Image (tube, rainbow, N blue to C red; front, side):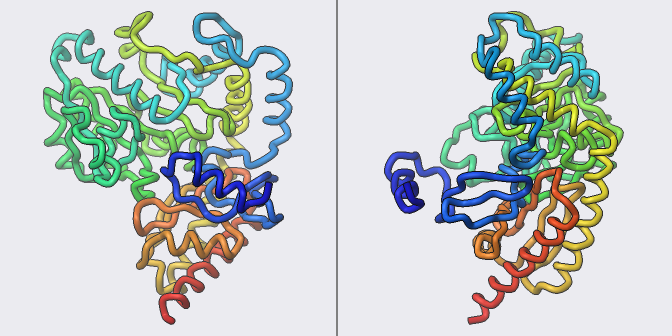
Length: 404
């Protein structure tokens, strides 16, 4: 089947919630993907921060094959060894005491919000009756109803209102406004230490420290959404490690299972104590195959040398992008950390993304005018140079098109 046929079938049978480019991807290798015509693309998206180890990683492939020969799925009604080993590994590498597994980022956020609401009903004295949730401008936490209710962007929210009530939005990185908003009736505050979809915005240390302190004063739970920025993406295992601020709950997903669906809620024992059998669940979560792949990813990404390499590559990429901003009139600012970066543009990011396809790269947008780079964490420095060189050519091509 050629690309034209595939695209025609997609347009006929698939719900049109994505605007896909006019090529069909068929395989990947390292930091590159290839379409059905043989065109190679250097991948600056990695499945939206999912493919942390790139494509065709030998250990991931071997684990999938060996795991599939045992158990793929049995549901959460029964014990399996990979499930508990992964839970232990996550707890031992984080602030948490307990783990809840699900299948996606938005499910993880839904779980965290549910746990916070029940904690407010059954937690320590003074917590009873709290229902309000504080979130922040430019946030993105998912597309299901609870997660969407804590997502600030109007284009995502508007068509589906009314959403879950009791959510207020505060300017991101505005410490004073956050302190004023986190009152005695707030049960939870949810924040991304590094906002991804909202434009690659880094929280300041002052902001997160004061949000943590305000939550402590009000008896509110602090939820860190690290679905995109966690698990090595910033050069730290968890993005909040760089700030020295710990949450009460944390949501994970994207890279954890190497491209297979997995979400996680990490939590303290105090939160776990209010939950019991039947309070929450998932049919597919933490299947033996998925957990074994996630164990491989977690072991690799959490290695100190691996994280140091991401920090080093992040510094190098930041320098290259700063030079690009100086040389390209359509580029306004580069911001990021580790291997999550955004280039703010004078034009809509879509024009740069589309020009990138013609230059043999994949990049994506983060809001209307930010080009986002989320390459595999295993990308080499030479490939980073190639990515930026081709991105610069995409900016130049977009500028020429505007000038005509």
